[in-house]
Length: 342
Ligand code: SF4
Image (cartoon, rainbow, N blue to C red; front, side, top):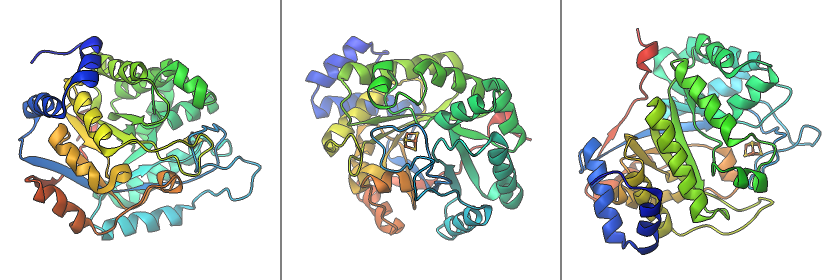
């Protein structure tokens, strides 16, 4: 099967049966992975602050700087959360918070350096999302290259591609006009890759985005990967509407699985396609039959929990589901980027 165009992807989405999507996604998956095997990580999102000035209308997490209820976690709070993650058998932390104007880049570099010093290689962490990285670089009046070098020197290996939601300028104008442009997003991510850091691609579906917008997001992601080769994985999750200004309804698990399949087929240059247990719970594992090969078992993420996500802490119970589907599941440790190894 050769690479498909946006028009072919549109036709497949509109007219392809579930069986056809599963078959084609399985073909692309088999280029990278054993068809009977899936990998996973146990992880925790640490939401270090909920103070944010971006005001995305799909977010139930943030408070403005002058509102009550804002917090910034102390270093001891962060360490306690990481210690608890280790007790659960996990080793991946994702730091994710708001655009807090009171926290300068130095705060982050000190925090990340202290985590690296305390835990060494026992814990890997996604230091920021690309969205937060753009905000911090701008606040520090640094180029993206300079800001990326500061993070790398603080012991950071990964900046995840979060905060992308739907990467079209129209979507951002409708829902997140204070966040950044799509061009900013990819410029920043390119600088991170050039600095030797690893990164990932993400996408969130189920707002009011059009099919054309979803396809534009996939096309930009594939183009970026052709250009840089810097994307380790693609994770798609679903919008949780509860408590948000935008509201709306959740999409069905079937629509999610079909989109995972189309993403697997279209993103033929990305090794890992990840399914979201955080937002799809038990239903997420069905996406392994639609081309996904990897998933997280999260023990906390306040951002999505505030908007209605339910976290299940019976990890063995969760792992029994893909096993019942016929998959051998294996723990995957986060890789250190080759450029930083040694
Ligand atoms: S989604 Fe992130 S950037 Fe947007 S308001 Fe919420 S915390 Fe802020």
